[in-house]
Structure formats: C-alpha cells, structure tokens
Length: 64
Image 1 (cartoon, rainbow, N blue to C red):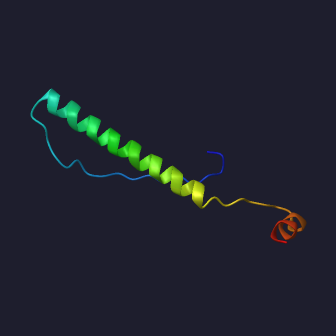
Image 2 (cartoon, rainbow, N blue to C red):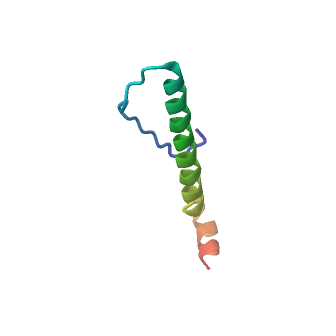
C-alpha cells in the first residue's frame, strides 16, 4: 500500500428493501455517499501530508 495509512469502516445494514428497484436505489445512494466521503477524506489527507525523511542533514536544511 505504498506505506500509507488506510482507513476502513463497516456499518450494520440499516434497512431491508422489498424490491429490486429499492435495492438498486439504496445501493446507488450508499455508493455515492461513500464516493463523496472518500473524496473529502483525500482532500483532508492532502492538506496534512507528512513527508518522511531519513537524513538528519536534509531535515535541518529544510527547516532553515
């Protein structure tokens, strides 16, 4: 995973649908909510990006 942190969540199914159309509708809504959540999470991760450095000399140069 390119040494990056992963976030995962799981939730209990909140409702039971009576027809295939309802299932498809709810599935589409849930997938859209997940896509929006992932997109906003990605933007937050970009804002707080931390760069790893293994060289003390490089770190002191960057800080100055």
